[in-house]
Amino acid sequence: MYKLFSLNEIDGITQINDFKHHIKILITPWTISHFIWGYLFYLLGINYFWGFMIHSLYEYVNLTYDSFKKKWGESYDGFRSDSFFNTIGDTIFFMLGMILANHYNNTYLFTINFIIGFIFFSPSFQNLLTINRMKYINKLYPKIKVNKIKNYTLIDHYLWLIWIIVNILYIIKFKFKKQISF
Image (cartoon, rainbow, N blue to C red; front, side, top):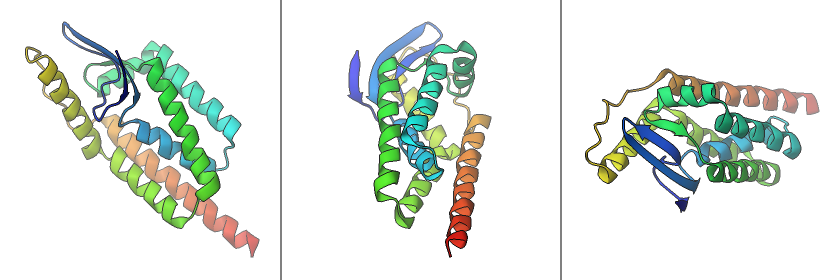
C-alpha cells in the first residue's frame, strides 16, 4: 500500500512477534529531520552535489545493511526497514532544506531550524513518536501484545547531542567567518 503522508512513523516494515505491517509512505515525521539536516548541511558548506551524494549514501545504507537496520530495530521496537518510496521523499526534503538555506538563510530561519531540531531530536519527542506508532499498531491489530515501551533510548540521546553540537559548530564557523570579513 502507498500513502503520501502519515503523522505516525509507520513507513516500511514493522514486525512484532507474528504481526507484520508493510506500508510505503512518502512523508513521515522523520522527513522533518532530513529537511533540517539538508538546511544545516548547506550552511556548513556542503554543495548540492555532495549533499545529494552523502544523503543518498545514508539512505542506501539504511535500506540495505542489516546491521544498520538492526540498530534502528533495537531502538524502535518492531522497526525492520524503511521503504524505497520513503527514501525518495526523505531525499527530496533533504534537498529542499539545502535550497532553503541557499536562497533564504538568515538568523531567524537558522534559529527556527535549530529549535525544530532541538524539539524533534529530544528524547521526549522521540519517545512520543514511538508511543504513537505503538498506539497505531494496537488500534489496527488489538491482539498484538506490545512490550513495554522503552523510555529514552541511548540513540535518542546521541541524536539530540549530535544536533546540538553540529549547530554549535556552525555558530562558531559563522562567528569566525564574520570576524575575518571585517
